[in-house]
Length: 286
Ligand SMILES: NC(=O)c1ccc[n+]([C@@H]2O[C@H](COP(=O)([O-])OP(=O)(O)OC[C@H]3O[C@@H](n4cnc5c(N)ncnc54)[C@H](OP(=O)(O)O)[C@@H]3O)[C@@H](O)[C@H]2O)c1
Image 1: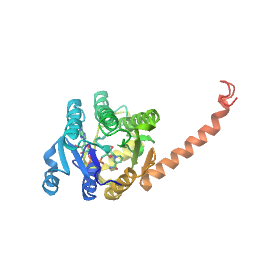
Image 2: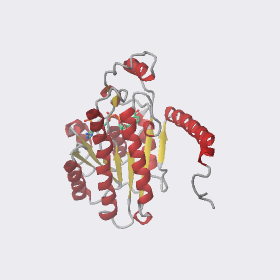
Image 3: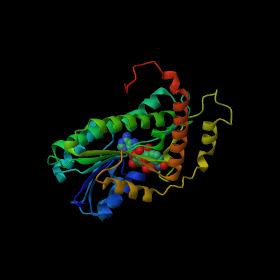
Image 4: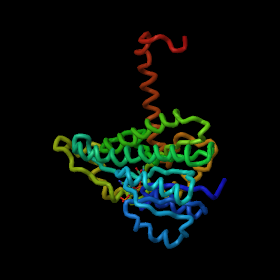
């Protein structure tokens, strides 16, 4: 694998994005590390030469900053190999508790920010890189993109939206472009994201202390996720190096437990109610 690869990472200030940027630099590759406050990356700037690390201000809510960052990447490196859509945040609370404008703002960052970055990434891979070189588009989604849960309504919806977007995008891309897409599905890793998470006060109707969202809200101060983010970014790095990467990379035992429970329930419902669909349509196999 080429060690000349150039990465573009959003939300590189802390957590997954920061650890991924550090790992890629340690591996000898080049990074365009983007953050809302670029000064938080000063330590990396003093550690790595300017021909390996470009730090740029990107708030993914500001489209022009995304476009400018891709233009600056082209000017500086003339190529781009891996784009990691990582920037996101979390507001928790029951659907009825979270004001609509807060839910819409969450989508602006978690979904629409990733949409703009992804469109620019695909265009760069196809039109700036030499024909057929392509690139890797990694979307840091969440197990909440595959499994909903109490208190997670808007966050989970924003990640579910990304799942549909990327699954569709992967089906649309011309194989000749050699652009590969992977959704990464972590659960419960220790990052700064836990402390940044905001819980919206509960709607008065949700006063039952035994409701799952209430229990999660009351226990949040003690929530201590065990996932090792350094190991997680090793797996993300490894998937970027596969010639035939999976569409989804589920990360961590907790994520697998949630996913298997969902698959079991989905399979059971599918089997139980399939007969209700008999004779509704022409048999697709006929
Ligand atoms: N930790 C987990 O267990 C877990 C589980 C599932 C999925 N994830 C996903 O992993 C990714 C990283 O989260 P994390 O856990 O590493 O939390 P984190 O440390 O809070 O990282 C989130 C990053 O996104 C950035 N960000 C937020 N809004 C932004 C905006 N408008 N423009 C640009 N950057 C913005 C943050 O920047 P600031 O420093 O400026 O706020 C930060 O760099 C997210 O997509 C998250 O949904 C994490």
